[in-house]
Image (cartoon, rainbow, N blue to C red):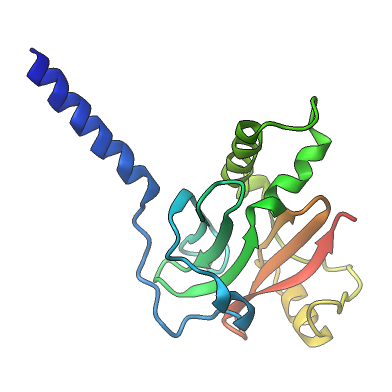
Length: 198
């Protein structure tokens, strides 16, 4: 009887370990990524992974939105945020510190200072809630919106605006650094087209 419990416990341990891995399409070496992201060290231990799928760059197949927290600890880690097409082409990558997810915790704190376990739980919660259906809007840019050229030129803005099927995705970093992304078929990559918050 004890042997049976031991085998069941062992099987459970191995099944739990697989939760930090998931089936993500192979990503070609020549995928789009910016030079600023090349310093990211993805060889560090993975602390937490979240992956969601949502229609974004294509009207027919969903994209993979993936956040992977690498580092020696959750609070001191770095998050790698990528968007990959169904076919396995990386169309967006951004790296930021776990502290960028933790910053908005100040609005929810009941006690000060927060314990390490509270901080860790908050970062994991933010990762879990990072990609939600309510974070997507279509069309990405309303037909009557004036051109905002802080992040894209006017030609790109008008091209995206003229596509009624374009899908915008919004997310928050820091306390008030809200970002708006959209896929630009002409450039074959995701571009930031606006911001919200502070």
